[in-house]
Image 1 (cartoon, helix red, strand yellow):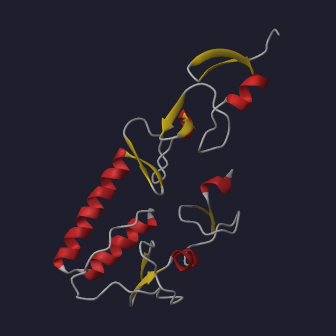
Image 2 (cartoon, rainbow, N blue to C red; image 1 turned 90 degrees about the vertical axis):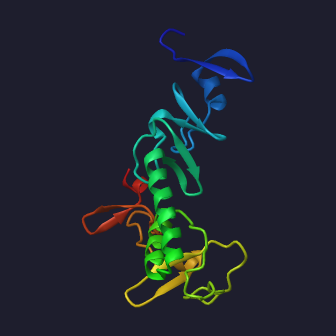
Image 3 (cartoon, one colour; image 1 turned 135 degrees about the vertical axis):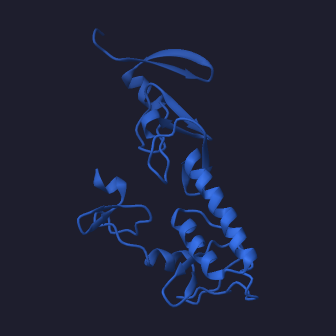
Length: 192
């Protein structure tokens, strides 16, 4: 019909021209916003993104170039370089026996969603086998978090670490990455 939008689809290697009604079920869905993708898109692994939705999870800038897919999300080259530098610094601090400095840097990495490799702090102490808060035993390969306080450094399980995070005023869930508005904290998605 006149004025109707049409879409091109190249599914299964076959080019088709579809009306909007037929295109919607066949369209790729953006992994970031969940909406169908029309026009330019970016593929990262098995996921598709609107060009404007492909953003670094750390700095929130649009990614237009090199990127890395990390457990916590997609990161731009500059943020990956920063992580790599901090991981090298962490290794250096551990080799020097600076457990306090290493704990602070490890806490910073974990706040950015990076689980630094476990290592000997040089103090001769073994990694704790239980969470410092709930005393639940850690299982092999379980992600742990370092929480540095004024007087001590605690190793926490995921549940206890999440309980130490600020809570989003929009959804009441722990906020790893957030935006402060006045005295309130919000996930970026809860501000919409």
